Every structure is written in C-alpha cells, then in structure tokens.
Length: 310
Image (cartoon, rainbow, N blue to C red; front, top):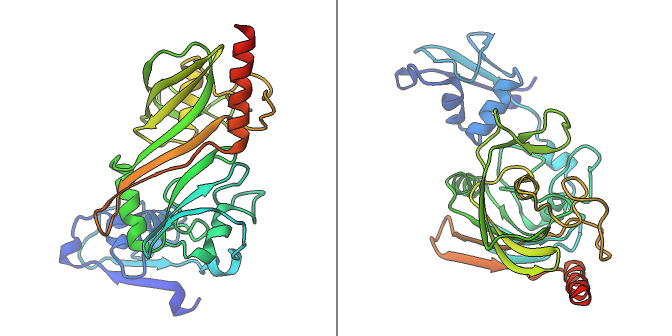
C-alpha cells in the first residue's frame, strides 16, 4: 500500500479522553466525521495496532493509523448529459428539479443514469461517500421535485448540519386517498419494517423520530390534495406517515392501494418547495416547482371523475 493510501497520527495532550472518530475526523485528509466513522466501522482504523470502536477514548501517545480507500469517484462516476433542470447554481451549491423515474444516486442495479451522474459535470461535490458527491438529501425514484446539492466539502458539511438542525424547509404536494382533515400532524417514529425489509414502517420501538405536518388544499371526491411539510427527513417519511394515518398516496406501488389510476405510472408525490438560508451568504432562498405534466393530468382526471360522480 502506498503512503498516499495510509494516514498516521499520534494523539496529543489535546486528544486525551476524546473519541476516536472525533480525533480522526480532524485529520487533514479526512473530510468529515461521517467518513471517519465509515472507516472505523469497516475495520480500516487501528489504535496501537488494534481495531477499536468509534467511541474508544484515546490516551496521549496512542498511534492511530487508517487505511484510506482509493478514490472511486473519478473512476466510477462518469458525467452523463441527462438534461436535469438546474433551478439555481452558484459556486457553492445547486438546486435541481429531479424528474420522476430517476434514481438519486448509484446503488445496486443503478450504475448509470442517476441524478449524480447527471450532476458530476456540473461540479457536484462534497460528502463522505465518493459515489454520492454533493448529495445532501434524496428523493425516491418515483418522486419528482426539488433537490439541494453541494459543490464542495465545506458547503456539504454546512448543508448537512442545517438539515439535521431542521433549518431547510421542504414541502411536498401529494394526492391521497380518503376524506382528509383540514390539518394533521403525524409524529411517529419510522424505521425499516421488520417483516418486509424492503420498506419502511411506523415502529413502536427502535425507529427514528419523524414528524410531518399536513394541510388539506382541496378535497376531490374520494381523494384529497394535501401539502406535506417535513420537520424531519426519514426514508419514505411522507409515504409512510400518510399510510399510517389511513390516507396513502395515490398510485403508490408500495404503500398505496392497488394499481395506479388516471393514467399515472407512479406515486402522486412532488417536492414542490425548498427554502433555506444560503450557508455562505446568509441570503434567504426559496424555490418552487410546478406539478409535472403527468401529475397535472392525473389531478385533472380526478377532478373530472369527482364532478361526474357528483
């Protein structure tokens, strides 16, 4: 292994009693605490020649060594011209309007054609995962709408912190089943479904806190158009919370009711509004994305059906 692939540091007096992951995260070639934890959990970090947990408390003189992985980003992520609409761009960040059907980042079975591949050439960057450069949050494949993407490591850290501190406003439009109340807040932990590991669920024990605020915009016969405002951002949060409340998203193949209708081939869910203070300038930024044509057509069909039934 070459020297460029190894990192070595000796704990000083300032590191006495500090956690291994915190000290490693401060090393010049480690970009974030998340990256430090990923290396530790992979067994790539030793203290005095022994693998230790991320919570291990260091003593003065401890020798910390890390085997750094090769840079996969340049080798695996080739820029692709996917025509992803860029709503806003400066030297720190991008706001893009992801179309439905596009996966956010590479994963098993999706080694090309993802949003990340479409943004590599636009300078997306930062974050602990070289296959997800710049990605601060994600949208499901079948969900369209606004995404915030960093262009450098410092901005990624700041935006990630803002996301954790609930300083980035995200709102969705969803067409749902049932007579929806004027307002509804769902505060229920979400985690992986223990019976069906490919989906999420509301859990009585072991889930992560999740809060979504809903507001009915229009009742359309047996369906309702609602706005969802995220307070937290868990995987499939909006879809799971709506299902748990008895109002699943229309057309949802996982958490919905049967096959899509009104010519819609996906769930009726659109990330239509994004607002935050710019991490560098402090300027307040707000963006909105109109409903895509397929959702507009499905909503018009729902209205027409409701009028006919009336």
